[in-house]
Amino acid sequence: MARRSPKPRTASSVCPCGRGPYAECCAPLHDGKPAADPEALMRSRFSAYALDNSDFVLRTWHPETRPGSVEPDPTLRWTSLEVLEHSGGGVFDAEGTVEFRAHFIDGGKPGVMAEKSRFVRHDGRWVYWGPL
Image 1 (cartoon, rainbow, N blue to C red):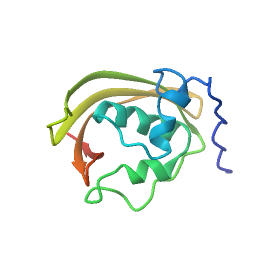
Image 2 (cartoon, rainbow, N blue to C red):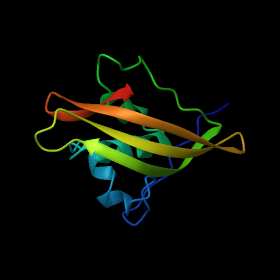
Image 3 (cartoon, rainbow, N blue to C red):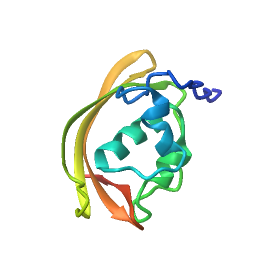
Image 4 (tube, rainbow, N blue to C red):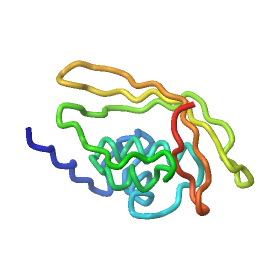
């Protein structure tokens, strides 16, 4: 099955994470700006999954826990994100957590992925460590 192409985004397109215009929300992070905190990184990673931006997903994964590759699933479409809780991740923190629900459609059937994720600072940037 052919890989679906990422949806084109304009300055006024709503960000996949649901927080505002893509150009002001996750696009700067996808273009290399460091995330201010774990929640911002979580949102940008969700948006990257929704846009099939696996390079960003891998780049923001801690090297000790990062898989060799992330392959988009052409039958899966990420539809919305709910951030339930976040802690840590302040200016002086070395780690933080984000609990979320990511909604998707897989083969025409809706589903939800729930996770409480750990984020740590690595080389001065927030990165995803893995689930708690």
